[in-house]
Image 1: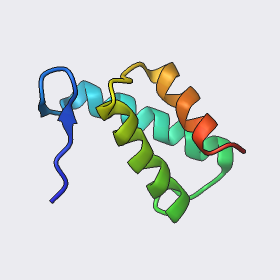
Image 2: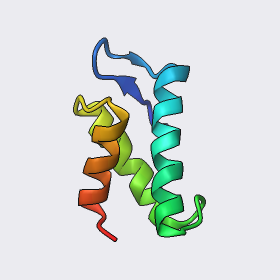
Image 3: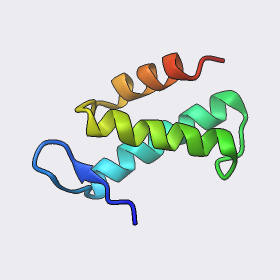
Length: 72
């Protein structure tokens, strides 16, 4: 089972954390017109979790890094 942890305190992600990650993924999928249940969205979601785990927690920074990793 995959365990997602907050980089700051090594604790499980909370509702605010998940809300930010969800909003970034929704915006990413909307811009690319991709299905949120598809392979492209899944790859983006995995990358988002890696970015968050690496300490990038701000919405705009996450979106910018995600867009640079998966350009249009």
